[in-house]
Image 1: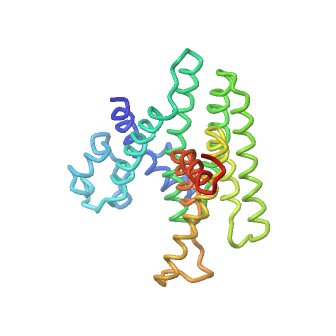
Image 2 (image 1 turned 45 degrees about the horizontal axis):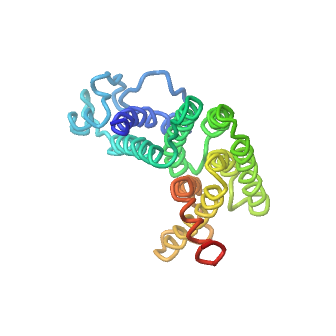
Image 3 (image 1 turned 45 degrees about the vertical axis):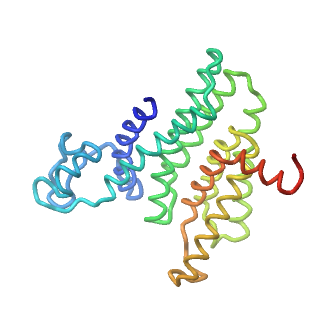
Length: 273
């Protein structure tokens, strides 16, 4: 039931993310003016802005001028709803602790942090695909949001080791990407460097295994995608390929499956039994 409720809430967030994805790269305010049809300029009423349902009821057209409404809008709403529900299920199965008030508080803080990460992951991935940029307006505040929520979760349970690992994870990924960008500035943008620090905070909060797997997975997934594009002749060796989506995908893979994947690898090479 909580997963369903968070899924519905996520679809509402997805509606807002559609605004973020369009306006932030353009340097526009995300709060004003209200959303309007780009063709006729008619403001979109609340009853025409219900996630998923309004697009279906309007048959993907503006009520006033008949302008087509892209399927991307309901897909973002649906995707965000599913992402929030998935985070809720993952968190309930692997992260939730309610043995006492301190651990319950920490679990709530951490859940909110990872729901926030899910939301910005969708926004940043779409913006990077559209513009090849990762806006400071989204990335930089994430240091504060993630650091405060996850840091507070560690403080209330007095898990100082977790706090240190979180901070070290953010610093380590930032430094790794900074070195790569310094050596190969044409292959790595500084937006990727800044995002790496954010992802390092979240992965470090979960543990060293999640941090290492999440960092490695980004390069593995991005590299495989680049190879597919080259083989299919959809890109050349000098083509610019957005890396942000693969950083985010790798981070989520590390968060969800980092511990078992690391354990399986260590067992395979004989370091654990």
